[in-house]
Image (cartoon, rainbow over all chains, first blue to last red; front, side, top):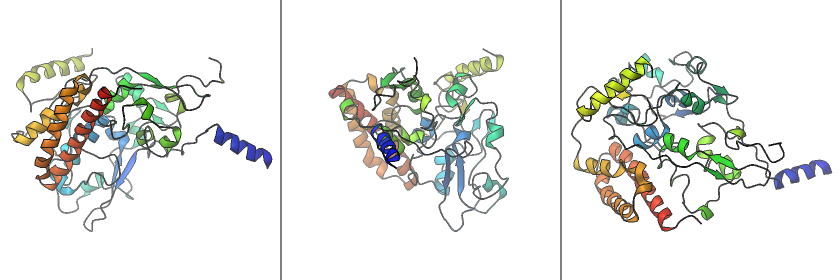
Length: 258
Length: 117
């Protein structure tokens, strides 16, 4: 009893954090959008693994305007038909990777095509499934290793959408840097500013997620990450999960031989 | 460079001279190409052109002077009331994006005025 109490106290003092176990890779990053409208053909199931293989985070969450919080976007059939939100691409005209992107929400009546997106609790209606779609991508224990996939040229996420926003100048490469860990037994995080900036741009993270540029004012910890703030804003939901410690704490822990 | 990639590059280079609304080639890391709808893109309204001028420069924010950044923040503030008058969909989309642009410029301005301590 005493040993258990000491162990728990020790863990608390040592700040050992246990992020929640992520869902299976096929479901990781899944967003279910349900308007609860009477005439809706059911909730939309959006899987990030499909779209993130084709587009940067920035394109959808900045340029197209998909909020990163639930119920923050206000997607409607009308907005899609006007060419916003899903309709920015899903208009039956735009070509991505040589394929015409199907038009979404074009019919007022239910048609089987509705089920491509409105797929909640329906079986066998999706065109793509995780296993076959991601078969050629490198994996970790937590799903697709998107960074390696991009490095190997297996994915080339588009960062701009013609006709929707004007082309932007190429972003200068930002320097990578170390972030000191809050505890002395963990090596610093090697933060790739370059990698994050290429996929996210600047305004997806600053100032919404990382609110201040003053180093002394930044108070993010693994606790705040696990609560969904700071790194956890993405790395609990879509980007590789916090459980994959070595992706950020790339160097061995203090107790391990260097 | 394989043949397919070379062909894409050639097409991109050629169409790059044809102005906006033809074929788009992304600028990040050889990212894939997407083509716009075949229909002609409607002329952009005055507020939208100003929006594009302001918010298409976020990638360069770190290279701007304090004066430039302060000016961009002011222009964001001046543009917001015009976007407020739009229909609900456009208001939601563009106000959100303007909020992000303004936030970034203000953030970088703060970082320049208060260097890291």
